[in-house]
Image (tube, rainbow, N blue to C red; front, top):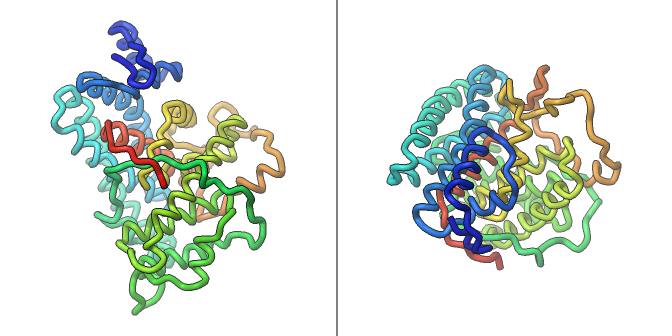
Amino acid sequence: MTNKISGERLCPLARAKSTVQIALGLPVSEKTMNQIFGVANLQDLSENKVAIGRMILPALEKATSFMEKRFSELNLDGVSGFWILEVQLKGVLEKWGQEPALKPLSLKVENIVKKLLPLITRATIYLKLSDSMYFKEFQETLKPGFWNLPHSWSQTNTSMIYSKFSNSHPFSEGLSDSCMALLLGTKEEGLQPCTVTDVCRELMTKPGCMGYTLSHQLLYFLIAKMKGCSDGLFLQSKYYMDILCANMMALNLEIEQVGFPFLNQDLFMENIMFCGISGYSDFYKPRWLQIILTWQQPKEGCFGKPYDNRKQLPRVGKDQQQSLRRVKRREKGFSDGCSSHKTGVAVAALGGFLYHSAEHSPTITKAR
């Protein structure tokens, strides 16, 4: 198997060994991962998809088992992550359908999908009872057909990274939610979808933002795209999404550089989830897939506090805590260390890795 980037070739024995390591969840070098991800012919493409599937599907099976036990306790953000995963897995099945080598893995994907839909339906009932107002505003994002997957891909443009950052006026999550509800048409009776107020325009296009503010701004434009909003502000949606994902990529690289502190893992995966479903392929880095898989709690199948020592948090400087701080949504943690939000963004990020590999080789265009 020849790596189209380096030209190096994995011999059949080495390729088989690497595939076994992946299937067992054992570490694989980044060089080998790049050789697996970067493939040159149709046979190698199928082998690549098998290797990636064997790496990701066991983690998704464990996460689905977690949802089977805890669906009544998940918050809306957690359920949304599993809903996006369900859409991604259906997209994978469409791409894998014509490849005999992928039949065994397709059966595994089908099994996960069959479990997810009734679980999401049941979880939605509990959401409506536990937080009816919040659910009313965002229930459309849990409806079939809302989330659409990318079929063409861009890469982030480093020239769009902010040169300076704004520290004025803390980001208001309540206002952000209201702006998104206006797009969805669920904020008030009689208001048309895709409504943009001056306050929302200012909030969602404000430059120099950091941390979770970036992902909230991107989600605003992503919801507009899924809702079909295309006039006014949204004539420039691609431009703003390019800027936001360029800065979210820079942030992820910063998180990687400082060793993936526990407090920033949720944000790291949320950035992959949202920019991935927005069509930015460079978020699907092989080394990032490997590190995310190590964050799953092997027994519970969820994502949350570090498995090896849940009482010990990493040392994170005050400046970093400020720039990467969590803009709280309705987060819900569990006594066993599991996190609803972190599990939701994790499964959607992993589903994105799988879908992107199924799309291989996609059309790549540089962001303008």
